[in-house]
Image (cartoon, rainbow, N blue to C red):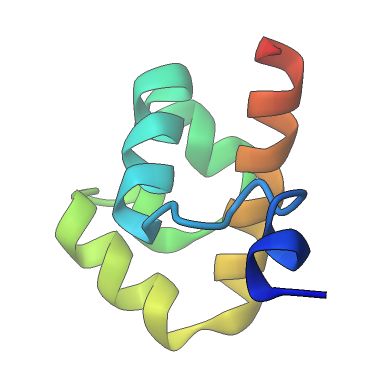
Length: 77
């Protein structure tokens, strides 16, 4: 099985973390996003850059963000 075949069912393939975060913020806003996923950088003085730094260093948080993104795009399709 080629790499392309493995990734065709992965909704995160080819999507950058920044794009995921920006989509979630556009859909939910920082306040609601912080209530859905209890992460300080979403609740206190939120910005895309500070959130990206945190998510890149914190695997559990990144996983929660990616899972929420997958749920969001499944609802939209």
